[in-house]
Image 1 (cartoon, rainbow, N blue to C red):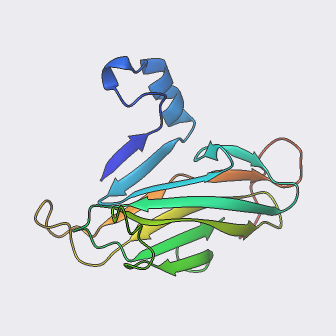
Image 2: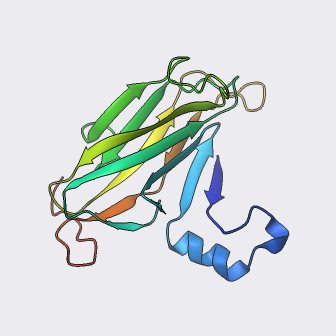
Length: 162
């Protein structure tokens, strides 16, 4: 897997070490093993605290993978772990891919309802492996959380139970 750290430049030689460290500490990282997953609300991406007083947000998602990588499922997880807290599960196939750029397997906006301060991560996965590049590794990608302040106190209050 690879860690993708959000910075202001794609050129490593132009990156400031302090910005890189700040991005890691700010959880502006996505992990990918064959897939690259992005999620954001407005202009706020992973690691952000998003004000959500209306209790409904529009979560933008984009999943990318090389055409030979089997990515067939998108999962949005709210405040929990796999196996119970999935709020969206979408099957990915040719109909969800961008016809002009099939590397983009999914790009859309989903409505997400929040009852209290919470967080969300977005994951994509597929069956099979990443052969011929890496054998015996299933493709996946997952974001760090986006945090939501629903109660309006300016911070994320972790729910006491999920």
